[in-house]
Amino acid sequence: MFTTPEPLGVVVGLVAGKVIGAFGGAWFAARFTHARLNPELAWADALGLAALAGIGFTIALLFGELAFPAGANAESVKAAVLIASLISAAAAGAALRRGNAVHRHLSDEGERAPGDGGADDPGTGDGR
Image (cartoon, rainbow, N blue to C red; front, side, top):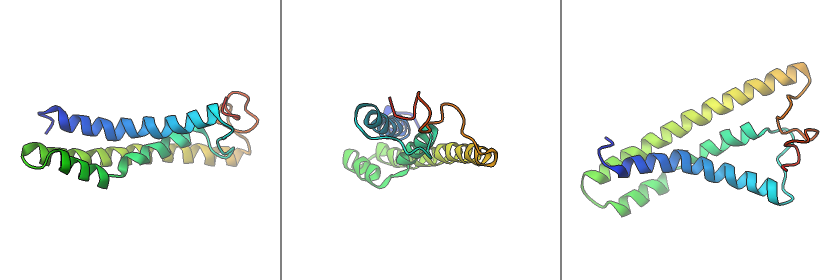
């Protein structure tokens, strides 16, 4: 399937690019403005949510169809969009499942882990 660079670019753009953009935007907002991450969330949770951004494939399919109107590249780009969406869904599911297990374990113990983004954590609680 990846005999040309276009489908590989689509997969990397949707999987890595969306995560970098969504997570980076949240981090920059927390770092350089008065915005703060909810104390109930950790940055790992934000990363899992950012991975969900790669699932939105309708616009990517539209752009692929406009950029490659006919030929073999058009079909491989469509397949790459669907594969990237599956990869993003799997990555987000794994990250959020792990985060859920950590939060459940901490709530059972009644404490938070150091560096998890809580309000009393001087390293990450205020986003600075």
